[in-house]
Amino acid sequence: SASLLAQGLHGLASPRLQMALAAGVAVGAAALSGIALGTSCNAQLSRLEPIQLPRDDEEVEEIHARARGSGQVPKRQPAVMEEPEFPIGWQGFSMEEARAHTDERQSLAMKKTPLDVLAELQRGNARFWTGRATRPELSAFERRGLISKQFPSVAVLGCSDSRVPIEIVFDQGLGDIFVIRVAGNCLDTSTMASLQYAVHHLKVKVAVVMGHEACGAVKAAQLPSEKLEQEPSELEQALKGIKAGLNIQALQHIQDTRAHDREAVTTNVKRQVERLTRDKGIMGKVRQQELMVVGAFYEISSGIVDFFHEVSGPAPSPTGEASAARKKDNSSGRSFNRMPSHGVKSRFEPEEAK
Image (cartoon, rainbow, N blue to C red; front, side, top):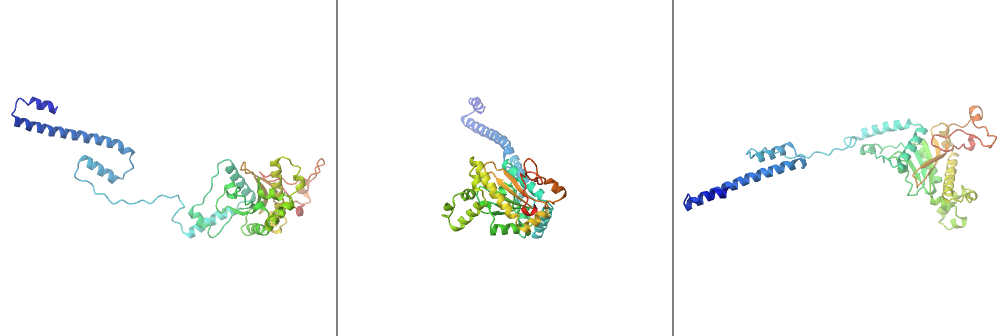
């Protein structure tokens, strides 16, 4: 070591020579230490480089040039900010292109039959209650195309209850469903007019009247008339309208709370569907097989929507196959009608079709 070397020279040289030699040895030792430190730092930096943020080629070349001690450090070009990448369909489209894309989507939607549309609703609800909802969101490009038109395939008359968001329950997106929501999902001037608009102008393929579990409006409508008369006049009229369609005496015999609730709600839905069948314009679309009208019950506790009371297809003929299909069962006296669509519990034939 440097200290041993200095001790060896102690007896062989004058004090001045000894001091010079000692200074030289110290400088050499410091130089050696600096080289070792630099080597150690380079080794540590080389270990850190793989986990650092990615560098561009020019920056890497500059780092290596400085590490080699080269006097020629490459001149770096000013950094250029790269534009972020967005999904296809986000940018660069004119309104003309957006409209053309929307026209194509509308053409495909118009080719669907009422059964196709109903099946899509059933699949969407299955995704929702099984926890696999896709929550379809349109891109900015597709939303621009909807500025000039809409072409929903379904119209739903539902309840205003905050627990029954129609699009979420059926896992549908913007422009897919024409929604009318009112307490108790009942028909009046405005809701009937809205459905007529959806059927005749928007050309929807399916019209749904959907009630739901624990509907406050239907529950309140079962109160005595004296209680209802204590409400504001508009609310009183709405509740009495629902009450008129319920069989209060029959409901009183149902002891199970949930069964009572379901029967009351589904009865109200059936009354609204039957009122729709008294509209000649709507029934004209049904008989031409351009429209299906169906009732539905949404169970909040499970998320499942059940369909029932379907009105669809041409009017049954009094002769031939349809007549045979409606022969009475001697044991029950019931009349057999056509089978409901897949996933629908029951059919309803309006009076004019019997």
